[in-house]
Image 1 (spheres, rainbow over the protein chains, first blue to last red):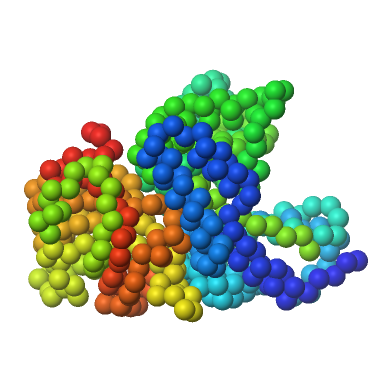
Image 2 (cartoon, helix red, strand yellow):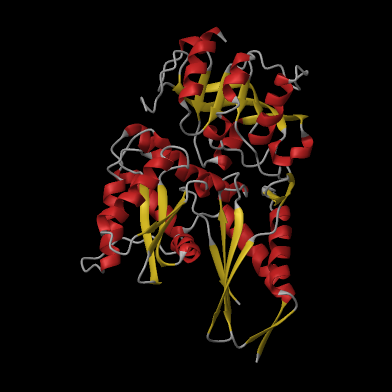
Length: 279
Length: 166
């Protein structure tokens, strides 16, 4: 059986903290660059230029891309044949704590949601998935709260049409408006349960932002239709107008119950940051 | 300050001078202090507040990443602050009808700056001094001396909004 020590996990998480916060994901950068080139509204184009300059400056100066270094969300795909020596969750939170401190990120986490109090760097949120094999994949998604605050969940009737679902997703983006740092990436989770649809919406943000080929699956067609509709809203970068309101719509689905159809939307700002490592 | 009153909605400018950071918890405390008739840690009259909670400061820099946070969360406190002399606000996103009305009434002004560009905005901050509420960590009130800080007038002194009527 393959073995791994908790300290190796802590080290890996520290590395992810640095990578995610200082270097923008390549697919997000490419989408931003494409939007910048294609944007016809001159103010929107200038803002997209600033956004691109910001990512370059962050990398060069070792500064966080955004001061909101988020609630650290950690997705772990754990191979069932891997033996861990030590406490997995503690090792992850130790890596977050040490990494956020070392790289001068922001202590945005309050220990008690009601009492609030002094803020710290951890804990993050750990989603654990047990998979086949003897490897471990760790993904860190530092999620800013300007956009997290605009998340929505709706429990639709199983007989509802796709247009109703589309309207809900588009309305969620309209409601976010200028507030959550557009251009957005829209994560959508359809199916499962209330909690699982919400998790899928968040996980959808980890899906690579791609350009579509000619042959589209039903889900890809839905993503494309939603993206077109959202980019007609004229919210634009910083909400000051333009054709770039979203960079992508990513949908994930899961089987659900005959009595329901949960749909969750998780919005990301343009600074969609994540990094992964396989141990 | 007179110059502020001539700025038109949508106008882009570069500001040099003093701004104070304050966000959610600092706003709550300022509002409570005003209501209780207590002395405030900053002179609100003519002041500009920046809705910002920076990261920790890396070695060799005056401040960390320091972009704007969502302004609408401050909406419930803003009319009282404007009434107490606050002149300008810098943030991101739209404001409530109540805030727009208060801006017009008290001749305030609301700016937005490059959102999600906290690293880039670091360039324009030349000096930082901690003023109050240090226990709030990133939400403490800081006095920032900025040079050529990029701004867009989002709501001018006449209450006209770059986001239109809604």
